[in-house]
Picture: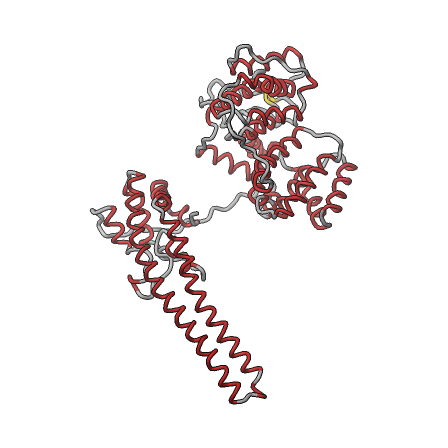
Length: 522
């Protein structure tokens, strides 16, 4: 982890040097040593804490028994008092010398980590510049926290002032560290000015909102489009600007991330109502956001779902879910899955009992209208993929690889591509054309055949994806390429197709990055 000041004050090379320094601690086994030092020092400190408890108990007992005190009672307390003082002294003396040993070990490991960082980055000015900025900063690298001393040897710089000078310092002096990295250093530290916090713009013009919506769709994994965002199932014509900058297909960037993708993510977060982004950072709020996303548009069904929450949970969580419903309605439908992504860290903080109730609530809300739509299925796939392994030890979302070829998967591939083709098209010829575009990417002989419509439901799709998890990564990549080709066969992408494609990629363990303007999907 890095501090806010580290991110704001260091440039890219300096930040790389700091991270390389910390990675070298892991590579060199320093983190294991640091954890052991924390345990040993605290074990020694416990001796003094026991002494404090003994002294406190003797003091309270003597005060309580003072009206009826006798010389005999006072004489009996003296050995206990002496024991407490002895434990207190032994503990603090041991902690003092243990701290000196910890500091000496830490200083030597810091020199090694600095040298390893230069070896990793091949750029001494990176970590050297970070150290020079620490020396030029008004507060240096001080960490103002009552618990900072316990982990002082785990910081990048001297986080706690050493009252014994160099003997108790956990890090070598900055000038020594810099000179070992940059022998030609002139001795001057870098001037550092604190950055000003940027203020968020509260108002947007209609043109700004249209631009943000276009970028929002790009961030969702849907190719850049023109016109207003469509509702699920409504086709939107893909952009065909010949002057648009060329970019590698998004499918080829699976597993990679660029600064442009981060910029899209920032725009995406900005487009979500504040009450939702605030809620997803707590376990209570994250659960209510998921429940609010599952509330049906039909008021009668939504009332039954709310009543289900009251029965399975409590009144407050049902009320909180209802209050978030207007914000969900205002939010663009394209932001539903990213909002769930934002809620995942908080959902991972659920206790096993809370997860059991949460899973039951999601199941009940989905089943309330006696049908499951694409979004509900996508949500269930995400929850199974990301939460179930942590709470259900018997469930594995990444089974052992058994197949290194797609030939044994022909039937499952038929179901997968047929479902994608039928979800995006109504005309039989268009369905066949989309399916053929997907199978051509697989290059199988014989190619899979178009599955019957009755086999193209979400239940069969789940079974097909589960079977395809046993294929190796190289073949999975071909499957994702085939799915993308199937979706864009008619040069039109609907929100439903985009969500389904993302759910398929996520289920196969290949999450898709955002799609940039002018970048083809496949």
